[in-house]
Length: 297
Image (cartoon, rainbow, N blue to C red; front, side, top):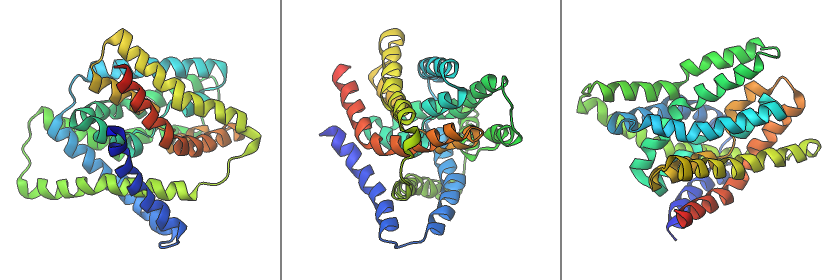
């Protein structure tokens, strides 16, 4: 019942985006523009306000417990298949999916943990990707995409919030109040955009279905299982840390992987299909993951 109470409100907000697209109440250009505004302004402001108010406690333990198992999976897949498949299997849609779910299940303490992971997520995984890609051609577009990590509004929002928090820089109430208003609107709008994306997904390419199923299974089942096991048995995380990191690992593949996998057509298709399939299936797998973690811990 607790899980349903957490997931149902999120699902209903996502459904708004689906309805808006399916019933053609707004055009596709609307969501293109809305997405730019939300992810370049609203979400960074949300992250800034959250980090400013809470800080990033135990960031070392959090990053260690999450990225050690994630990087193990990355390296194994990169050596077995390719670094593009490895990135598709490990890069999570933590902001759009992870944060709303964690806030509902683990509250503000869970948010602090998720923000610590988000602060290093792109930098660590994209850097690892490029360490493996030195054996092949690094195209200008991929290099440019890598450099964009440092100008990513999401990363900037987290870093600025951390700086203001660490140095205890005061923000006048007249300025902070509108920041809070924008922050409050960020997640509902992001979920509506997710719903519009789900409604606009195309059909899955059958020629790469086997590899898509394998990568999706790794992303939604194997990766969160490994993160949970590592955190539970080896690191000894508490319940909030454990469920937050496991949810982050169980999130579907993030669309940010696309610029990095476009060089090989077959793997580009696998990435596109995995984003679609993992996003759809996560509606089932994430609640199941939450239930399993709460049952075991």
